[in-house]
Amino acid sequence: MSERSSAGLTAAVQLPDPDDADWRRAPAEPAQLRVDLWLAAGLFVASVLSMVLWRVTGVRTDPASGTVSILLLAAVTAPLAWRRRFPSAVLVVVAVAFVIGQVVAVPETLVCNVCLFVALYTVGAWEPDRRRAFWVRAAVVVVMFGWLMIAIFRAVADPDRSSGLSNVGAFSPLAAYLLIQVLTNVVYFAGAWGFGEHAWSAARDRARTAWRTWQLAAAQRRGEEQAVALERLRIARELHDAVAHHVAAMGVQAAVASTMLDGGGTAQAQVAIEQVQDSARDAVRELASILGTLREDREREDGERVGQLGVARLPELVEHTSQAGMPVQLEVVGSAGALPPLVSLNLYRIAQEALTNSRRHAGPTARATVRLRYLPGSVELEVSDDGGGGRPLTRLPSSGLGLLGMQERVGADGGTLYVGPRSRGGFVVRATVPVTSS
Image (cartoon, rainbow, N blue to C red):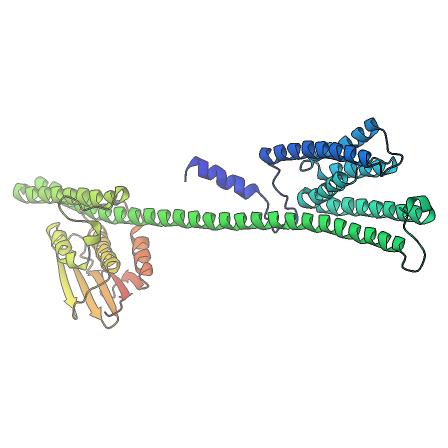
């Protein structure tokens, strides 16, 4: 994983889960803040133009002066430039300026109502503290309805404020007019409240979708990393099995050569040294084949690949081990059938590791037998030695990974492994792997 993707992963982990109660909406982007600035400027210009038109109509008999009206209109519209940064504070300022404008009779209502709607909506859509968002909006709505009730009372009590509508009868024209005002304000405030909540919920749903998308991507990355780790373990196991086998063979052959030279057996020593050279070449060839899989999956020049190792190569392995100084007999029992490539490779490696252990730990006169049994629904590999007698020619250090590697290989194929001494002397390794008949 690159540094950039790692940094992105860390940043994503630090973000809260959208389903968590402490989730906060991401701050407004610079482009959104610029839109707010232009919105506030446009509403201010529109409010001034609306005020001038209302003055021309003469509906307001005693309106506020032009200077006071412009200042109050600026107080209603200008705070909207910061509505996404400080939504609750903006709503309070706009609401206070709105009420003052109504008290001093600023001849403008349309744009001011739009500004109050936008401010109320913004608190619902952008206020990160949801408890504060509720109480600030509730307080403004209560104050506004209180102001509406005062205006209704004044209109009923003062005939000059009733716009010439008759208040005679239980459902007079004035009562109908005032009821329309109440219903309009109910729809107005409910709409601003509901749209704000919907915007917050939509933003949370988008964040939830992005969060789950990131979780899926993170799970995929973890799966890829685990696959890489497993592949590295597989390659490391192949390296161990290949190198351990050939190095053990070279150690035994070198010990034989040394013994022959001390006893004057120059010809026999020459044969042992040639076998050391053959083992070294085999080790290098297998290392090149295995390491080549780390670079690209292609055929080697000689056409041999690690995937081509399998039980069909057991005769070569037995012959090579016999030439190294330990006689080995190969027996195939049952009708040979096609095995899955991985099962065939694992059985070959198990036989290779078992023979390596026999050469390492059995005596100089030890003999070994490799039996491959094809059974109904399974295949069994058994590698045993008779223990020989005496001390080995050489004691190479053991990594302790041989038996573990065999257990992992058999376990990966769903089989069983038995490793232990034989009752009549020696040691046996028996691997049984289930196979599906084709």
